[in-house]
Length: 482
Image 1 (cartoon, rainbow, N blue to C red):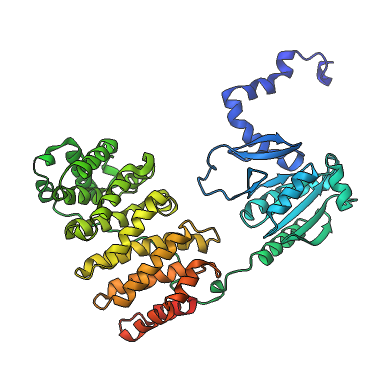
Image 2: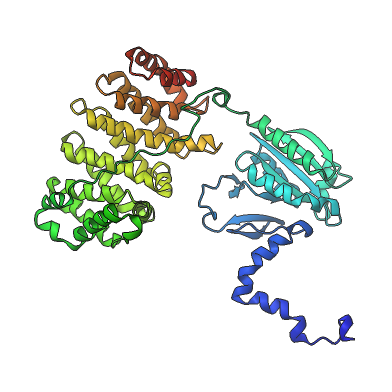
């Protein structure tokens, strides 16, 4: 009897559930659920999502940030934020109509399935992958006809699996069968029709179609002489620790340089900015610039609450504007460029207004400095770094992270600077490249393209072709995208 499953003690039959109830079992549960996805009707909840029943249907809700910390695209339906990039489940006409309405300007696919349809389960994994691939571009919906009778009646579905596609609010096609190749081909063709490739992607642009690394300023000055400029404040433990870190890293490499007490150093820097004369600021900012070459340091400032130290520095220099001493002005521009050694911080610099606004302001007034070409070169480099980070988003067919208003402000400053620049070839190259990266694959009906047309950007750029500075190929590329 024991061999056929009868008379087995409870402590043995309940063993799987007992294991799953332990912390180790809870850790394994997501992997077990994912392994069963292809043979079970219920979907595995993506990490960071919980399932909440609302109006008779299951709606995925975000629990904080997505696992990859990327920007989650969502649309509002009946007052609720509905994320894309996942399969949506609709068991009522109300929920289905709301999802289709959210896709009225793009596209959607409905997968009609049922609990008693084995072929349907063969394409569940492919449908999930397509939903992730289509994030921000399409809504992929699943309807279980064993629950959603009224939905099946409206669309007269008689066999599963049945697929229906919708393009800009109108039914586009319908097909049946668990053919994974057909499913992938039809969904991708639908997305391409709803979101045709930008014309710039069809051009041959050697400079504008490749990824660009941020430019940083890594030169280390004589540290002892730098600290002497702080006077008695140079004896502060925060200065000693920061100087020691920079010196060790320069002499022995990053592996031999443990991080100093960055919270204490940050507090010291903010105190200098808020309570001491401008004369003290240059050596403090330069020491921090040297430390920011290390991604571990810039990564720390990416996680600092409200980015207090970085915003305090930027706002202080912006408030000084034209009265800012030359050495403090240029070292702040160099420091701002070194912030881009951390990918998370680079994204935040563009995405979060309390960082992007003072950063763009710093670029704008620096580009107009007529007395110091190095200031303009450094400002052009910072503008290039900003544009390059946003440009990568477009290369990856993702949404811009730099707000359009900031792009417009930056482009206006760059075009003004290009028209004025007569002395520095390096500065001109940085300005032109930044303009090209900003305009490449920009929305054709957007404010940035409109501004470039209104300011005669193409003519401004074309004038630089005759300068004989070896920038002819770059100018030709920018002319094409303008």
